[in-house]
Each structure stands twice: as C-alpha cells, then as structure tokens.
Image (cartoon, rainbow, N blue to C red; front, top):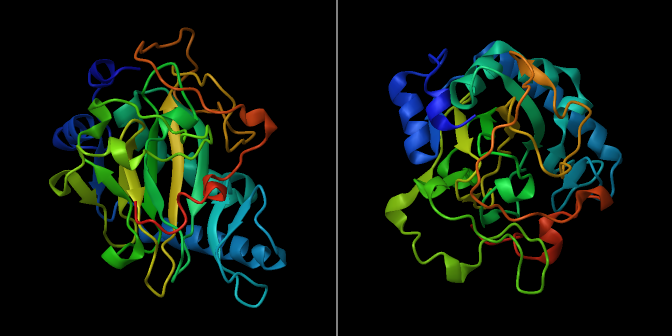
Length: 297
C-alpha cells in the first residue's frame, strides 16, 4: 500500500503529526512506547537465548557471536529470527501494541516478513556502515517498515541506530562492492550528500521505539559502553506488498497476516530496486567481507 492510501485510513496509535513525520522524514521515534511489563518479558526471553549461546563456539545461522564470546562469558552481536527461538517474541510481535503501530504506516492489513535481535554486547567491535534495507529483501512496493525497540534504552556511546533524515526520498544505492560482493554498504564516494545536519542518532530510555522506512539510509557505530544495547527489529509490510525474493533471514512466519486480511491484489511501485544474491544458498553475513567490522557507519 502506498503512503497516500495509508493516510486515507485513520491512525490508531500515532498522532497525525507523528504519522506525517514518518512519511516526510523516513522515520519517527516514540520515547517509552513499549511498557515495562512487555520489556520484562522480552528481557527474560533474551536472557534464555544468551544462556543457550554458551554452547556456541562459532557464528551460525541463528547466533552471531561478538569477539570474546565464550561459555563463561557469552557475548552476542545478533540473534536471527528470535520469534522462532522463543515464544515470547512472537507473542509480542503479533500483539496489537505492535500490529496496530505497524498499521498506522503500512495500512490496516499487515503482513510479517522477518525479525532479528541485535544484542550488540558492550565493548563491541562491530558497527554497521551506511546502507538501505530494501535491496536485501525487495518487495512489490516500498511499504515495509522496520520497528526497532530498545529493550534497555540506548545512550550516545552505545552505537545508536542512526538515520539520514529524508534519505528515503532519494535514490537506492547499490549494496554490492566493486568486486561484486554483497556487502550492504554504500560506498564512501556516494555519500557526499550526507552532511551532519541530516544525521539523526536515535537514543532514549527503555521501550523507546523507532519506525524506519525501508528506503532510509541508516547505520550504527560500535557499542563502546560496558553494557549491551539490545534492539529488537521486526519487519512488517502492507498485506498487498509481496517479496520478490526469499528472505535472507527465513522464518516459518514469513507472510503471516498479523492484522486484518490477506490481499487479493498486489500493490506495485515501479521505481527500480536492485536484486540481492540468491538467498536460497544461505545468508552470508556482510562482515565476512570486512567492510562493517569496526567502521562507525
């Protein structure tokens, strides 16, 4: 569903100003949106996943390990598809607190695509260079939205998710490097337009929630603080927005209608989008190409 069609439906959670800000700027942040009772459940579920990771000695399809990880001191960078690893995450992602929020920016019929939990352990080594999401999982339109929830909050030194305001209205950049590797990184030579006055670092207390347009240019610096910076990141789309390719982070729940009804017709935005690698062969983490390990953005 396209923005003008979404705006024809009344908002449920967002104010009119917040919804306009999302479509105008490519993001909107909601301080303290997720209440403590949900945060406590999500933290407990995350603690269980961290406990399971003690047996891991190398990154696999679920657990991305941070430097220094061991059975004695588990350290995680990311957990893929947390909704498939612990039921609490799926209960949260299908609760109206999330699906009604998604509906305000994608339309009343909402489809789930994928999710990840970026734990980002303290004193970490990995940031994520400037990039856009939609080339990794292209859809028939640009309705997909990532909703990020800081489970413990985020300060400036924890590598907050950082957005280039208004960049969703600009071009889509190639996510391949000159050697043809899919690195999910905009080359530095393409970033001359990105000035400090456009950069927005999203910080806030526990439960702070960010809605991010799928075309928005964003990144994050490494977490240099002592404590982890867990950020839960489910992705939703309008029910009439269909993926062209398999997901790089597969889940049995991909395509589930979590609010409203399935679509009988697809919505199309004819602006071109670059195709990713064939994910059927398995997702190859971008940092294996050494482009996103330590650079701040």
